[in-house]
Image (cartoon, rainbow, N blue to C red; front, side):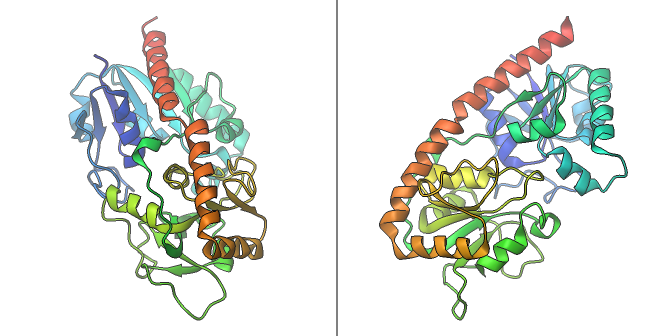
Amino acid sequence: MIRLLTFNSHEAYCFDLARLGMPMDVVVELAGHHHRNWDERMRPLPANVRLCTMQEARGRRYDCIIAHNLTDLLACRGMAGAKILTFHSSLQGRLKQEQRGESGAEIRTLVDKYLKAVQALPVVISPMKQNTWALDRAKVIQGAVDCEEYCGYDGALDLGLRVANHITLKTEYLRWPLHEAAFQTATNEEPNAGSDRPNVRLVGVNPDFAGVEPASCWQTLKAYYRKHRFYVHTAAAPLEDGYNLAMLEAMATGMPIVTATHPSCPITQGVEGFVCDTADELRLAARRLLADRELATRMGQAARARARIDFSMKRFVSAWRETITEAIQSRTT
């Protein structure tokens, strides 16, 4: 049985890696993470996952180690086992986040040299992000959603929904000024009055947003997707993809999507939702869905079908299993 080690940079992604069915240790108590341990609000702890510290991990044997950033990879240097580095950010996004003096070409060359030095296989989570990194041997394993776990859209609440964490740190990534120009933030299920902007409920870890909280658990989050009329996503290329996991979850539930134009947006205008260039267009799209629940339901079903085809969890699991096998075989040959 292949034994994995990974790092708790994102509970939802680790949860999906656990679907591989392999015993997996997850390093917690990571610097910079919003929670010192596994945050049960994001996902329940899978049965095949064991939590550990980095010190405990160094005393154990693993067949494959999956890092989510260079800090993870550096932490496990000297440890036996195949290594994979997963790139969750675009190169431009990483440069902006770290505000480094090097050029993109310099960073790409340094990272590529280090990957080869430690014999780590690179994995990138989207085609757009792979294009920014252009690394040798990189595998693209696109984010996925299990449509069987999300269903029952009702859309009874006259509210939009957006799920986003640490918005203040990602204002440019999320095109937050565009979002705020189009929508008024609601912190509960009661729409705010006195504004011409449609109400969108904001959910997530955002301590500097008064009244905004993450869902209390995964089941509560699923209920939010079912009840709210539409889902909102805005993102800036090439800093971020035109979708994220929360948007895929909304699509899988059967929610129509109101989104900003983006090269990698999976929404077709007027089919799974509305793709908009301006704040005025976002507002108009939201009002159409608030006024026509039948339209919202029809578009939501198309979004669910699109999620099932384009973001298959079966394909995600198969690709990860193949990549882990390749990493182990290349390490031993």
